[in-house]
Length: 222
Image 1 (cartoon, rainbow, N blue to C red):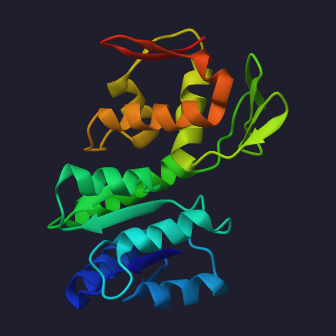
Image 2: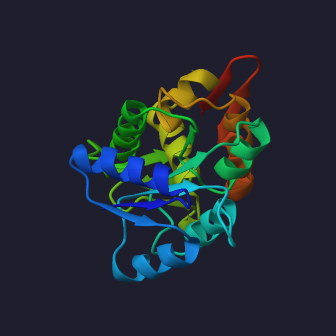
């Protein structure tokens, strides 16, 4: 089930029609209040969330969704007419997984939804655990511990740490990390990686030294 939150009737109907014809179940909402009522009945696979909404705007709704354990890992694609970098950065910092900028085509919408669902699908990992020093990722539970203490990471912080630990000792460029964590079609700036590395390091505390910055290239996990 995909939830659409869009106050423009024409856009809401176009999104619903395109996704329904592509085999998805869709529930359309006009406001954040309606969205949260529906979430009490069913947790969606993905949420298409407009920024400019009456009352509570998309970024406020995004913050509430990410702070609720029931929806903290639901993939969220922001759909917005805003194109400035600061709007995208704010959304990504609050936990958005992708951006779709109006106007957009039906084929692009369906393609990006499918890509986001693929990236967000539970991993069928060959290894149950990834270990780097005192940092341990339990791939089945999607948890991260340092010295046995669980660290609370956002969806993207977890994916970024997983990408680094999966290729321990290998330098990965910012572009490579963008492709791996955000998807090949992510249109953001590579500085997004730097900002997520910064918050990841803060949460890892003294273990952050395991993430090494390779000047003018990217990062590696030692």
